[in-house]
Length: 179
Image 1 (cartoon, rainbow, N blue to C red):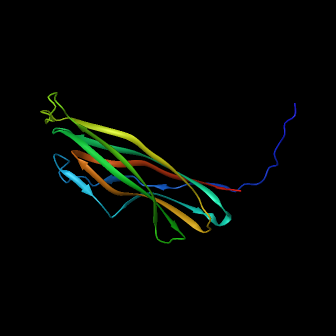
Image 2 (cartoon, rainbow, N blue to C red):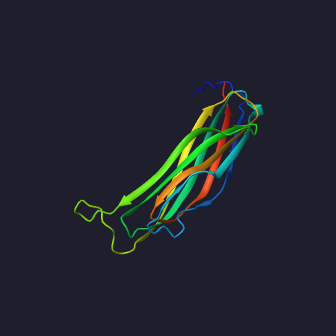
Image 3 (cartoon, rainbow, N blue to C red):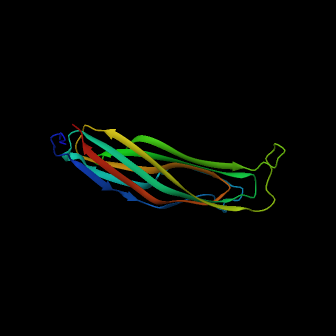
């Protein structure tokens, strides 16, 4: 049995492992007990990756971001809330950053004691949670130069959270020449 082979051609492929930074989020000053925390800029940079696109004419670029979101609730009131907004941005040749994507992590719970009303819990209940958070993003570019991609936390909001952090942060890029 013979197989037809397509002619092979050399493809430009680059895989880059970026930098990731673990960060502790500045939640409320007194350990989260009944205090609502809301935070906006300055942005917290948690990952970056750079691609030298000089050798590409029309690259397809795929980014993979992954992390662990860790938090501990102080759930002696009526539940908890945590919301984190991540922003993906790009800079060309060390120029200004251009936002290109926004991703949201959100989790909450309310305690309902059965009568349809949310009531405080009478005992303190500390719950530690670690959950993966990840996204993938792709684009086709027609440019040369150095492309740097950043993932920032641009906003977060917590209610009844004792502490929160982002760990195990990875941002990787795969670039391949398109025909």
